[in-house]
Image (cartoon, rainbow, N blue to C red):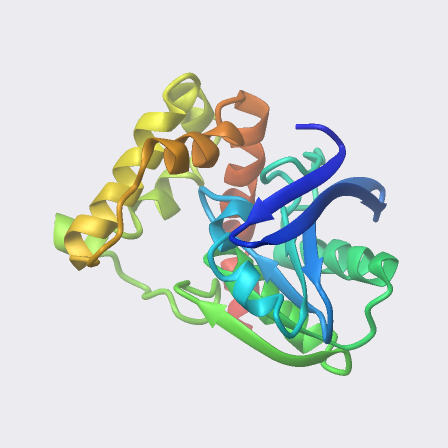
Length: 233
């Protein structure tokens, strides 16, 4: 993807660009005007996960969808994927954007970041929304139950924490994993009127089909969950 440009979502135009902050480059997609709303997506997605809600929010807000470190088109640092460091990096980005007061919504991994972010920067946040996530150190159970019904949503939590193996098995097969993940959720939850089109799939897998990019997302799991005992305290 080019470093900057215009993206049409619905009837609205958004700009995407690379912004340097905290010693790395973040990819952001921004549009609308008003009190800022920061959107942070989860695994295995990017800013594109918010494409349907961004035009709606942009009617009243400045909307900024962020690719996390190691996600989408943002840089992939060699370290610092724990929630505290990532929150600090996101705050440096937001400071660079010039926002002093804003809303934040996080989905999945995005919620892992937004939760400690709210604790660390309460004076900046107007509200925070946490969507569809087990917050490490807070909500995950201490025991694991076997069986598809218990584990189809969370089996990858353990898989992604194994050193080196996920990258080795997923290289060149990222599309298989992502397509299975989305189809399993849609079918199991019986979500009506939702289709995973070839365009959706191509966009979702575009940012995951390079080994380095897949490794960046996996690092959020391995780093965060290894530190879960400390987070519980």
